[in-house]
Length: 227
Ligand SMILES: Cc1cc2nc3c(=O)[nH]c(=O)nc-3n(C[C@H](O)[C@H](O)[C@H](O)COP(=O)(O)O)c2cc1C
Image (cartoon, rainbow, N blue to C red; front, side):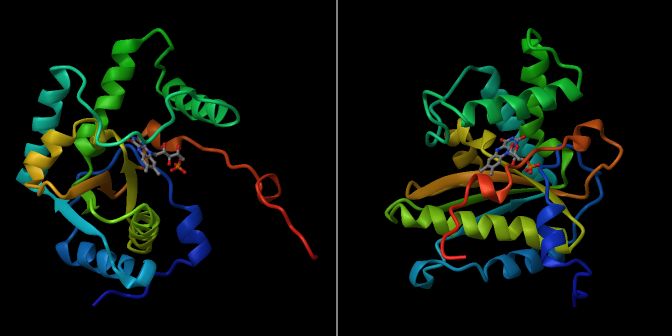
C-alpha cells in the first residue's frame, strides 16, 4: 500500500520541474503502477482513455538508448510530428531562447560550442541517467481532441510522480527518431508516438537541476470580466 503523499496539490505542481540528472536508484514497479493508476484518473472526452504507455527499465531501457544514439549518429530522421512552428515569432521565440541559453549557460556551453550542445542534447537519449523511461502513444485514427486527453494524462503522471518523491522530464527529443523508437517498443503502425519521459529520483547535487524557469503571471495571459 502506498502512504498518502505528504504533499499538497499546489506543492506537487510547483515543485515539478524538468529534471535532467537523476540518481541511479531504481523505482519499484509498484510505485510506477501506482503513479499510472492515479494518472489514469485524468479526464478524457467521453472517457475513451486513449493513452497507451510503455515503461522501460534495465536492459530494455539500455537497448532503447543504444539504438537511438546509434541512429542519431547516422543523421537526421523525419520527426513523428512537428511539435514546434517552422517560423518562430514573439513572445514565444524570446522565451524559447531564454530557457535554452539559461540551460546551456549554466553548463558553461557557449553559443559557438555546437559539439557541446549536441552532447548535452544527447543526454536526452540516455534518459538523463534516470532508471525509468516512459513512452506515450495513442491510436492514429483518433482525432485532435485526443491530444488534449494525452496532455492531461501525461501531466498527471508528472504530478503523481511528485507525490511519490520522484521527478520527471517530458521529452519531445524521442520523436526525432520515431522509426527507431517504434522498432524498439514494437509499436503497431496505428500507434502515434506523443513523447517520451525520464522518471526517477533527482540528483540534487547536479548543476543542471538548479535551472530556474520563469512564468508570466496570470494577469499576462488572462482576461478577467465581471469582478
Ligand atoms: C511535451 C514536452 C516535451 C519536452 N521535451 C523536452 C526534451 O526533449 N528535452 C528536455 O530537456 N526538455 C524537454 N521539455 C521540457 C521543457 O523544456 C520544460 O518543460 C520548460 O522549459 C519549462 O521548464 P520546467 O519543466 O522545468 O518547468 C519538454 C516539455 C514538454 C511539455
